[in-house]
Image (tube, rainbow, N blue to C red; front, side, top):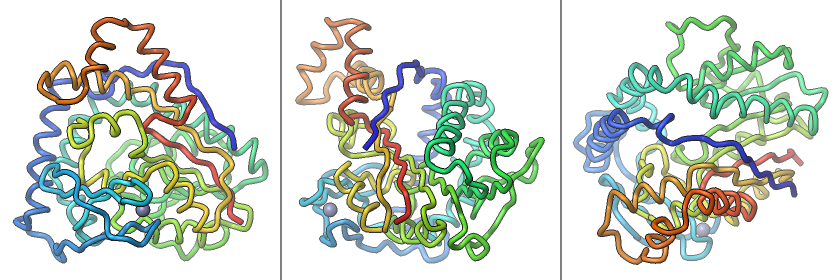
Length: 339
Ligand SMILES: [Zn+2]
């Protein structure tokens, strides 16, 4: 199984500039609390207990974050929000969300160029290299629950795929001035068993029922088709050290943080063979340093406080590379083939 190390730098301050990011998080926290305390007005807002989809057992309460209860699966160490809203309520919330509007209208506009350069361009290169390596004759690529219209615009523009489909897009694209647009599909029917490359970018972590989504992924893929997935893992440095104090832990976007072991088994159980599993995250070390600097009372991290105070920038770079090399970053990407 291939593992990848990325050596270029991505600066957190460029993609999450303050004070804009703090303002976005404050809106998000308020909305999250209203969903989990039931005071938000959306249809089907009941919260239901959620068992680990990998082990079938009820996870154990570990910490509260923005009104949500994060629980740990005692068997596979995944972090899961339980109880949680169903998908219908989440979709309704996202359509109406103030945080979502703030992200699209203010935040995305301010960080678009940095995200394009630091995230989407490398992601497009990665996808094209997957096509070369694992599916040179691939013609249909579908992106499920699309959130990044300009990424799909670039994918269409590459001319590498005769058919680029956005399946159940989450982003409202009607008003965006895109030069080329992917085909949009509200339901999976036309793509069943004929998708050559299916992408799930930051989907598994935010859906109410990730097991169901992986089952759908198998139904969508053609025999031998390739699943490409990115997500956030509970095994990574940031979440292992910071837990409920991790600054980017938003319960509505990060409802399922599977351990690497659990993710591997879930994908296998859904009928895929994993070809590549890497954690090429670039921000874990910077995020932990920033959190320790801003919260001097966070307990149990004296070694890391010492490290950041005395070891310098080179040591931080080396540590981030080490995390990538040993699959210990929180950002995971997977390439798998439908069996
Ligand atoms: Zn489990």
